[in-house]
Image (cartoon, rainbow, N blue to C red; front, top):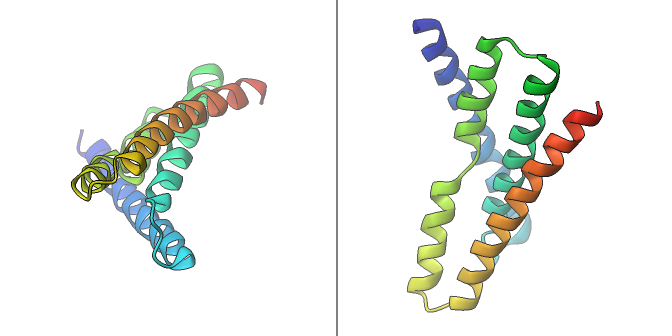
Length: 126
C-alpha cells in the first residue's frame, strides 16, 4: 500500500508540473487569450492519453498494477484539469460571457470524450 501511495504521489507531482508547464507555454504563446485554450489542450491530451493507456492496459495487459497506479491515477489524475475547467467556466459566467462559457463546456466535454474514444481506438489497433 505504501509503494502504491508513493507511486501516486510521484506521478501526481510529475503530472502537475507537466500541466503547469504546458498551460504556461500555451498562455505565453497566445498572449492574453480570451478563451482558456491551455486548459482545453491539457484536458484533451489527458483524455486522449488515459484512453490510450487504459485501452492498452485492458486490451494488451501491457502495464503492471504499479504502472497503472503511477500513470493513470498519479500522473494523468494530476495532469488533467477538470477542476480548473470548472473554475474558468464559472469565471466566464461571472464576467457575463455566456457564449464563451457555453463554448468552453461544450468543447471540453465533446473533445475530451472524443479524445478518450480516439485513444482507446488507437490502443486497440496497436
